[in-house]
Image 1 (cartoon, one colour):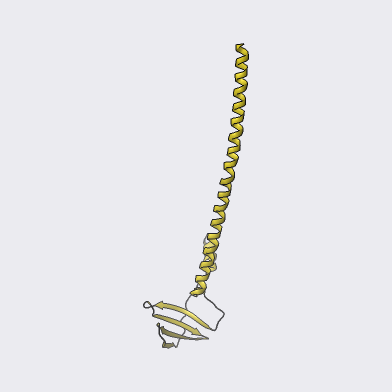
Image 2: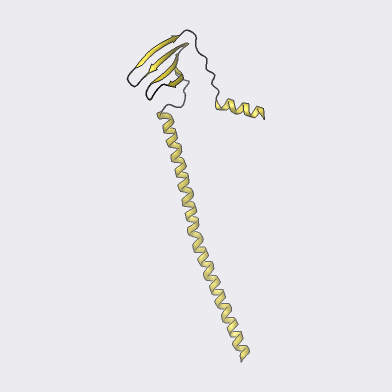
Length: 135
């Protein structure tokens, strides 16, 4: 009789262990799904944030004219800030260069340069090529 009781207890224990294992596997599956959704939502939120940052920077570049344009006849060669709203601007029209004083209210011609000033400007691509050649 004791052997049959022990065997029934072992069978009951195995059944309860199997049911607990099935429940923990189901719970683990349920827990894994929300964490995957949270990771996907976090990744999507990060992507949206990066895209908004790119568009904001592109707007600022266009708004403050930080991208140089070489297609027009009138070119700004150099700008030096003198105060909060005052600047000296070197402008080239064709082959002639002019030094202008620019304030919040007006623009004054300071000098018409007899000899054009050559300012060496290297682009990022040129600097990258030089760095590759040094390696």
